[in-house]
Amino acid sequence: MTGSAPLDEKLLKKLAKLARLALDDDEVRALVPELSGIVTHVDALRAVSTEGVPPMTHGAPLAEPATTTTTTTTAAAAAPVLGRRAIEQSAGYDVSDGMVKVPRVVE
Image 1: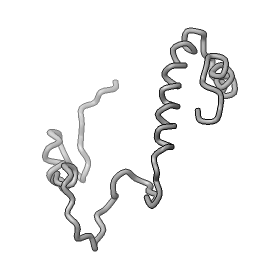
Image 2: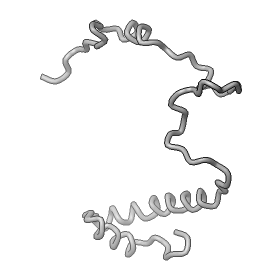
Image 3: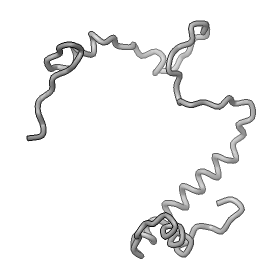
């Protein structure tokens, strides 16, 4: 935790109380190293320069822009996109009116 006290059992108990979490001593001892690792990772991410990187709402584009002329070489971009009919046919169940009828699992 950059610029603040390191995460220890006392701080974790205080944070748990503020978050209204009931943690016993064994849980606190187990969580301190895990949460410390997460905080260390976040600090490392903070150190990465994001200058000039536009903000985004999704990790991948929701739709390919119509004006794109560049070619991507990632495996995800090369994977074929299945149409609705292909997906319905691969379901292995009855399909009617665009819905897949699956076996009942709850009685």
